[in-house]
Length: 156
Image 1 (cartoon, rainbow, N blue to C red):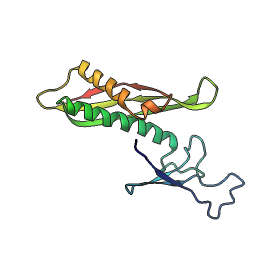
Image 2: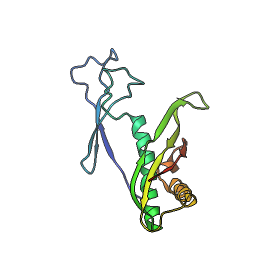
Image 3: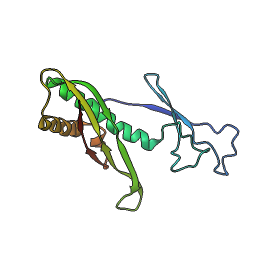
Image 4: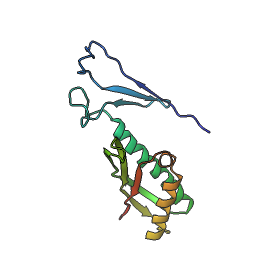
């Protein structure tokens, strides 16, 4: 077992607050020292009460799924002797009504583009198998009910 923490902090300051016209900007702090500006999504809370430069929880969710999948894929490829030079994923999450009518991240689509080099490039079947293994190993994918799809492509 391991324990993972984040400090999420918001302060009202001089804002009236009860009129609902308060800033949703807040800060995420992580144990390694990273500090990230967070905010509600401008899709949910209009600017200026939200900050489009901050990371919203929905974006963080998509990034978390994508990052976990990538880290597993990198490890699996390395163990199989495939050298990766570049991995870029344009991941996309969909916030929509679920089967119970509640707003939910119903699906995440991963679109990794991977550049391989070296003497042992994987076949298309090898790549698909590594994505499948990475998906099933990913802690985040194993933790959510959201459908996660991988639409991988190769890069020259």
